[in-house]
Amino acid sequence: MQPTVTAVAAAQRVGEILREAHAQLPPGAELKPFGVSGVLPCDDPTDGGPAGRVFVEQQYEVVFPANWRTGQALANLADYWRRRGYTVVNDLRDRSDPRLSVQDPADGYRIGVAVHHRASGSVDIYLIGSSPCIWRNGTPDPV
Image 1 (tube, helix red, strand yellow):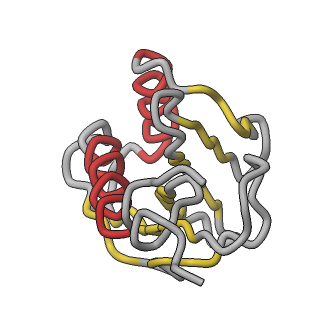
Image 2 (image 1 turned 180 degrees about the vertical axis):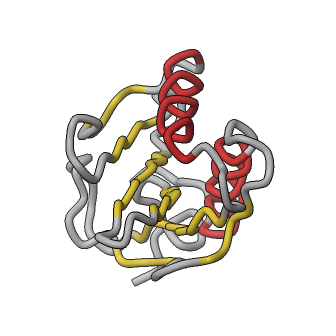
C-alpha cells in the first residue's frame, strides 16, 4: 500500500485551494466555517483503494456585503478553475440552485461552489474543499 500525505498536510492543501478560490471572488467576501469539516472516514472510495483511509473536508459559507454581485461568484470561479486546468467533476450550473465541483488533476483535491437562492430573495454561497482518500498518518496503521 502506497504512503500518502498525512491528514495535517491534506488539511493545509485543502485550506490553500479554498484561499485561492476566495481570492477570485469580488472584494468584500469573507469565509465563515460552516457544516461538518475535519477528518472524515473514506467509506466509499472512488479510487478502488483500500478501506481504512480518511479524507479531509472544509466547508465555508461566503459572507458578503449588501449589493455584492453574487451572480459573479460562480462565473469567476468557473473561469479561474478552467484556466488552472482543473477537471469538472459535477456541473450543475443550469439549475435554479447552481453548483460546480472540480478536481485538480495533479493531486486529486476537489473544490466546489454551491449557490442557494432562498424564497426571500436572498442568496447563500458555499465553498467546499476536500482531499482524496489518504492514510491519517501517511501510512496504514500497524496491525
